[in-house]
Length: 247
Length: 201
Image 1 (cartoon, chains in turn green, orange):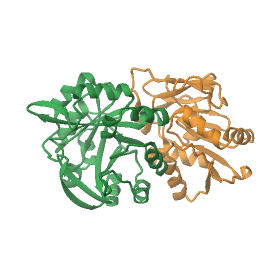
Image 2 (cartoon, rainbow over the protein chains, first blue to last red):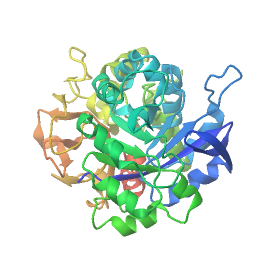
Image 3 (cartoon, chains in turn cyan, brown):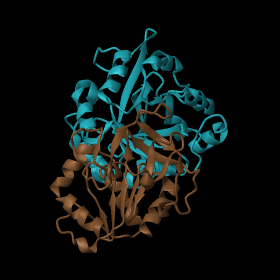
Image 4 (tube, each protein chain N blue to C red):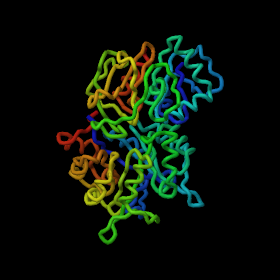
């Protein structure tokens, strides 16, 4: 039986681990490698690393030598994202041992980019990152683009995304629970595996999320960085109710 | 020496890390000088579009080299698309020929019993014994990430299928040729057992 996944997300900038709140207010956490090692040991099912480093022109910058050491320590399925907008970067990341690619803004700006990835690597490589924000009780995409959230959710799948990671920006880093109304809002439009992100703060949040049939991964960051709760502990508590991988 | 096939679209770094940690010598198919007579085993890592992988193999004249090695009964482990390209063709890219070493085609997953793509940790069931699964606990989870699956003509080469849907072939063995649909390199302890079994053949 396919298992539901618990997925820690790590963000880094200029080779240091950081944590944001609502995609702003960054906090410095230090050595990224240490966190990767810790998550490796704690029964995570997959890990996602987001690179927020930028060069002086404001474009995303990848230090592949730095990532090489990080990736070689990661003995679980790994996705990497952050400003990936060309095939060369993807080839390089795969060459280092990365398994999946997270793309968000680059596919909003250039829809053909998803198709190009599919042609080269297949749909299963792509996790489409959709950042949603709640404004005046309405959900919309967190971007300059004016396309509607539901249209975009449908379109990324039609273009060939293998999975969607849906982040509620207003919840991100706030540790006050996932936004399940957002899940209700997009539910009928989703037909690929959905990964939910933003706000996880307690064990029951993971249980509630993973009980939803279309949600295959519960992602979290702050809870694993700033609390005693580990993927291992979550699994011990909810594995009787939800199919989970117990190694 | 292990020959690690570099299709340029696979997670080859994972395999390099694993072999390095095991202190096993390897070379890449993209290296300039390969002494084929030194090759004891071949590993073909997965990830990649069927047509793109076949196209990249032309660059290194690999088809000829592979045919030569397989005729010498060199053990071969194909992972995911590294197994799929052994077949005649794939629904992923119609009209593009695979290696045709194993007769059959690759089909798009249409099953309602699993996610599409089939991505995540899942279980297999054996259909017959294979040296690849020696000491492997059948309840162990294996990591999958694919949209297509192998449909070989000869059903007797199938060694396991997905527990949820026995139409989805998860491993094959034809003499010295082994293929797995899951990713042993990402399946932690359970995957390591399978890798060791192959390396110890």
